[in-house]
Image (cartoon, rainbow, N blue to C red; front, side, top):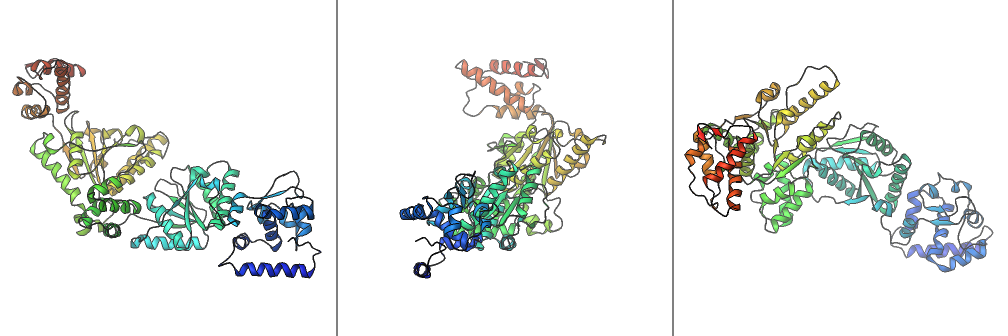
Length: 605
């Protein structure tokens, strides 16, 4: 029943009595009461919103509006004439009804006479069938809370929750983006809120569009009882600054997630830093995840010492173990990162038996593998890591002529450690724009820290070359890149391998910081004979090969492998075993690639 300003007291009393009876039937606050309280509506604005929505819910309301106002749809003019306690300020763009897009003008050319339409998201909410606004659903996703955070993360979540409860924008920073999201979601959950995540790229449009999207996010906090997180990964500096400025005035709980490549943000924001977990906390995390999944916890301590799994990855790995996967393999699979074109992940197949090196170099490589296998014992259990955060990394330089087995040795080490080999693509990492090379390297190192992968920088002298005298800004920033690399390699807890054909080109300040330098010699006749004996797999048919004679040819291990493969193709095409003629032909082609004579070491090819 519509109440006009001239309605009788009896009419008003009847309406108030009906309203009171309706409230008694509700178990809690009504959706209309929630909207009215959340957006600070006056009694007139509340009644206007309800009456504008009335025709959508009750057909008779449209008829009553037609009788009372001459139109089946409410207008501001009609609302001012039929609703109690009217005030013109409710019509202004800054007032709640229009500022929060609760109602819209169907005819913007006429403020008072235009029919009013309740926004669809608001209408669904009033009907009790609320779901996320369609525009926000296209650019956001929910993030789940974690059931049992390790102690350092629990303390961080408490600090984030305090900022969210005060509606103070908070920057949550750290090296593991997945953990930033999960810990922030857990903080929001502790405040009775679900966390919705958007990326900076979804907000980085025009200023007007960005403001409108964030206003919808504020509105959704009231309608959907949620908090917000904006992921600033890969965002440009200008976009980060713009979003940070808007966040300070954001009238809802919001967190800005900043990885190591995000520029520093000011603007008076609260700040919470989320560091990597110490090995003891990683053990606690993995053990609790395995326990929740009903999986055995055997080997959890040793595995946690190698892999630094984010929270959600640890839970997924525990479920994998419960289904029958080994813990090591589950962690390796779940920690395997995506490097976004900056590197290629290889699954090693080479073994120690494939390497042919002098005893000294072989011993160095095995000691290198042992240092990775036992690093948790030495660094954490025995206390070496407590002395300094620097010098904890294991960085090795493999130097020697091309084809002497440097890359093969890196694959053997990764395979022996049961880890992935990550081959860094220097053409993608090195960027001509100032600061971008460091940002790319930061992503590579952070991803490798999670997965305990072995990093391989082939032809590293291109990246780790000698610093030059500073003559211009390009020299200065090139030197800064080398300095940044030195710092990251000293704090990187995994194994980083660099190969070079020209050790003399390496920066001396860098080579002094290397844990291990392995020199790969040009193979002598005895080594070449061993290489030829391994050149053809056991299933390859061979006939009449004189290995000592082949070893007399001055070839590197890489060249011998290439000759063997080419000879095998020649034999397969001839439907015959590999013969000395096939090997000689393949050798001539291999030597021709470097312009060498077909006679080497006194042996005719």
